[in-house]
Image (cartoon, rainbow, N blue to C red; front, top):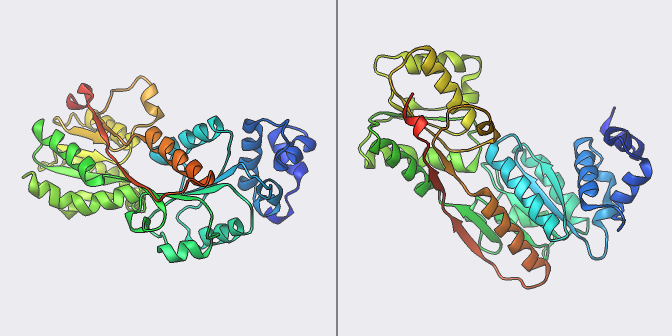
Amino acid sequence: MKKNNIRIKDLAEKLNTSASTVSRALNDHPKISHQTKQKVLDMAIQMGYMPNIPSLMAQKDSKLIVLLIPNTSDAYYRALEESIRLFCIKNSFVLFVAETHYDLEQEQVLFQQIAQMKIAGLIYLAHKNTPKLNELQKYTKHDLPIVILHDNHLKEDISSLILDVYQALYKALEHLKSNGAKKIAFLIDDDQHPIYIEMKEHFLSLTHKLEVVSDKSLVFCVKHLGENCSSHLDQLIQNKDQVDAVITSSMKWAYLLQQKMERFSAEKILLVSLNKDDSELFARPKITYLNFQAQKIAEEVVRLLIKQINQDFRVESKVFFSQLITKSSSLQI
């Protein structure tokens, strides 16, 4: 089905509801719940119906907040989205999520559409390809309330929130060193993620500062390894000059490394994950991780945006600090 041929009837069939309910949701009918409006909007963007839903965005007193997010598969981004959605609902706003996949052209199209619609505010997650401030403003209304996350170069005239990445990585490395690590590898699965980009920039200088061994050959991105990823990790573990600690950008890679270490009966290798995800709900060994406090960041994002929406505008910037959550089992491979 071509996206530009999507009809309300098609949305209704996908959502297993009536066309009238979908129509009312898109028109912000007061008898339709926030949760239902959210589901309809999510399905509309998923099926490509977005260009045809200006009605909800054109209300005189819009209650719609748009979130532009690079991807929703990353544990940190997913936690942010879920928390932002929760705080929007608590404050009687509807959240409309558009996943951009780091595509600058796609973002520019979205900015152009947003500029023509009446929305309450915009939350924008910066990334590697993020345009400069003047480029961003070119595609949005001058008076549109905006909060930007994770790019301190864009905070001159717009409220922004950033994570102290240097301090977060220092905590992880210091923890590993204090538990005997002498040679540390850094494994990331998304080299466009703003947090991991910055950590890559700091990694070698911090290992030098803390007097632990590392080099560029021990900093690698999973997706660049492609089909060779599994064999590469096998070699990393089996190498006689193997590392004794690994920092991973997600819990899934930490668990994979644990499984490989057990299979090869490798010597103890310490692990720290830069993300915690729902996989910890399963009966698996607990792994030390950095808590980036996505819920607190989301709450602050929504608070700042609502202040602007209520015309209590004041440019604010805030730095968030991570918490190191230590799990003893991650030291007992």
